[in-house]
Length: 159
Image (cartoon, rainbow, N blue to C red; front, side, top):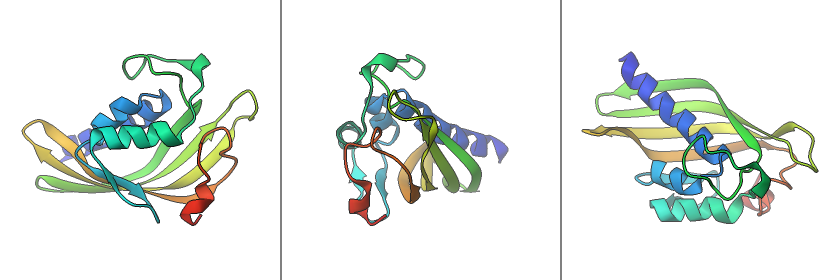
């Protein structure tokens, strides 16, 4: 049903909005019922653990707070996560999706450019409150200059 596909696609876009606004607590809540991880990494579960993972690994700049997604966060990553080529498959109260992503960033030190490209592989379930993530895997395929984005070395994860 198309309304299910729209609801699931909105979850994909909400993820982008939350991460780009620096609202990692909101991101943890969005993924709180899911397992989250990437290629070659352990899966993380629980809202607080997922929020903590993003807070520990993603640089935020205090001069860019935007209150679009929720309460003012301690700055933003100065990124835009762009999701493309979304394919959603619904089977009753379960669904999966595949999509590609491009992350662009511009900072005082970094000109506007793509910094990460990959695929999201997602699973969802539906209950009386609606659709929610049950799993999100980020398969990073290309890494550019993430020196102003990540506080970890992405090559330690095999790519």
